Length: 163
Image (cartoon, rainbow, N blue to C red; front, top):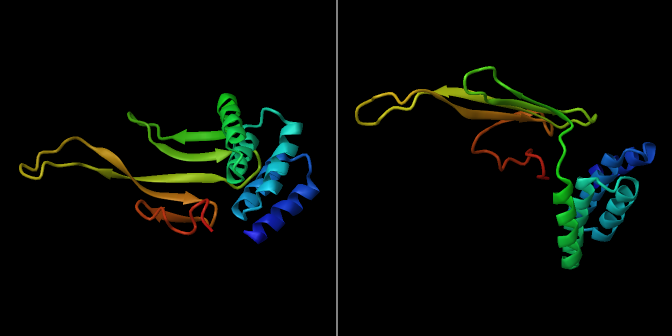
């Protein structure tokens, strides 16, 4: 996490107007238990963009970690009122029952997720009668290590949010 913090900090120094990077620095600081620094980074982002829900949410998390619970609750309520905005594309299959196939963003970061499904025909175990067909989620591809993961392995260390 220290390396991630150093990289995000370097990026923030090169592009101080990129508030997403500033908030990523705050997220790293939270992971490193440097809560006051995270609060300050979020406050900086919120001075520039008061309606930045992500900065409100991370500030709420950091405030809760330093036992400023009432402020954390108020901050989280602000984040929820503002809402989460998707800057990207959500893609589905073009079938009778659409299935999510990918999520990408248009803000210039690496986050992108690809979902794979496998056709399935459930059968009655006693009569072998078919119950139609459906699709099961079989894998997820994400940018952390650009590898796929079978469903049930989501505790894999490469999953976003894990170290």
